[in-house]
Length: 167
Image 1 (cartoon, rainbow, N blue to C red):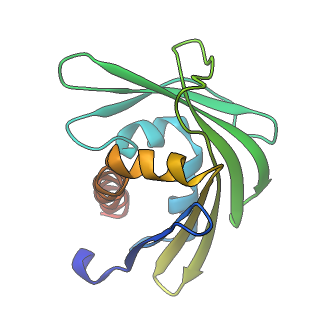
Image 2: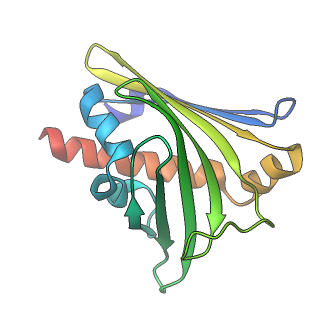
């Protein structure tokens, strides 16, 4: 079933945006939880062989998620999502930043504003991820860093997690 699930990755250079539409063979409640609960995010967020590790998470408007992506040789890359709006089971928006282990923003790397929208249709849930960068150079930087490949791998990890939950 995985191969028939929707996966669109669109780069909109005119508006400095990435648009990803991804369908999952799972109910909305499971997919929403996977995007909003640290113990689930840690199981799928990073592309293999990397793993996500949450340092702190406060999923509420004004809260944030501070996490590391850990590589197989112990290397770490830190990220922080500052939650702006949350409409449970429907959408949330946040600002995503590259940071250090204390959450201090690295001004030399791009920040992104995104909105994730969730829609259940029958036995599947589609997540639309719209990510906007301040300038084209920032968008091009994350593309060169492997955003498409990394996100694709992470979303495939989520397929596996959801499959296990529903088995």
